[in-house]
Image 1: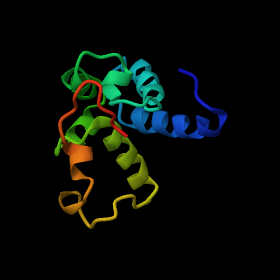
Image 2: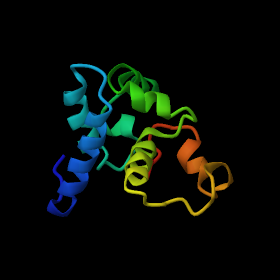
Image 3: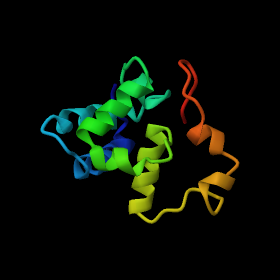
Image 4: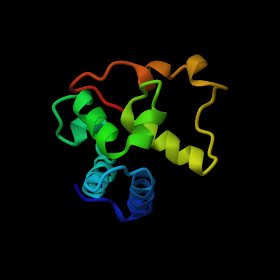
Length: 119
């Protein structure tokens, strides 16, 4: 996958976010793959070519454990990464005061089915 020139900074920022939370020696190669896969159109696990969301959760648990632990509400991973990124920049993207009352709740926390789009 190739990144449009206008989005290279976004890739760099996602990569930096992931590397800030690495918890293994292998994390760096996963971080590059994940940051690039965030530009895909499906769920992150699909864009990474993984068999299911659990495989991606295992990667987070084993290689980015601080992020894995922060996602205690089981938000979809791509949305979670962008939320973490926005939180770091103090950018408020949710129109509701909390996720539980947001009209997009099911898009962020619902099941991830093969072939459905994440973002």
